[in-house]
Length: 94
Image (cartoon, rainbow, N blue to C red):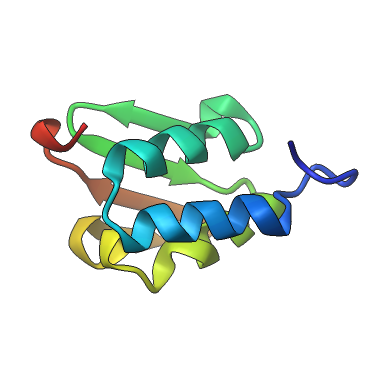
């Protein structure tokens, strides 16, 4: 449940960070999909998890939460200006 401004709560971020640190890929994807503002800005297709923040601070916070974790180091492939991120995830991980 986001806070009153629509941003993820401290507890949600802590849970997400724990899953990303533990390399629980299914849980990370599930949590991101649940917490991401604007569901059409997060796309899971053909082994790619594509995240577009839309400039929303809550989405930016979710990216920051997972950036310094083993999940990010293993899956991140590309970022582009404007808050666009591509992560490659093997189908056997989900």
